[in-house]
Length: 335
Image: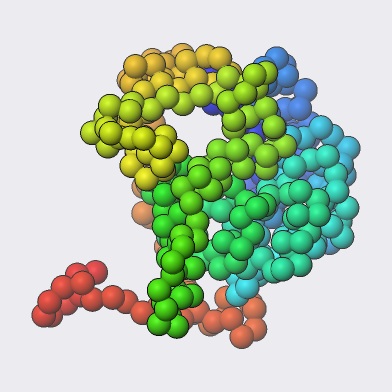
């Protein structure tokens, strides 16, 4: 809340090994719902994250009841499908009576969503969050996502791993999607005469679609009566100088360094290129570095998993070695 960002904080419910039981998590969530710090402002809203809908047990029923009986701002879960399984799919949530409720549902990734999944998303107006850099980085893929962009928004996952700016994600998604559909012509030795995806569409996925995924028509677009969440780009920066189409300039040429001002809820969060913070920034940075070193040490000392045999006990889904490229002449590969 101190950062001034607008967000839905989705409390993750799961079985833990530190004796913080599922029932204790539910009680903790109930306390948060009554916390005056949350209820006295409208920037940070509370939601639910749960990854085990495929398990028809008491925990799953507790989450279904929690979502249906409380005013939670969002429900999210990982859904991959295909060889990854993780079948927290739209069809499963429809069976549980969650798809047609008032709570917006965001399916993270939906890499192998089927046509039936897509139709359920459209029927109930629920959304996918396509986190393309994550999906490429970890090899999850986004096999069918370009076919369901009418019910999708662009997002970012595991922020500590790579870039997190939504502009970069939009540009990467635009060009990779263009290439995918260009190949449909090129692989048949034909030359495409049209462009499969526009900069306007990428801009929509990065802005308005995210707001609609959260069922917030008052966000993601500049209009009278909407929330004053605005971003101002420096059109005179070396990247953008000479622009004529502002959307194309942002999607194809800009980066975060070109953002001059940011306003959230009518309050400046960046002004004249400088962050506007409530905290002492050097003090925050020092605490961050302390945490980073502590967490990195834990991960460096954690043994890597043994990826042999079947994946997660799934028959006919085995761990295999991917092809490794060679990027240097002569001996070695440069890996």
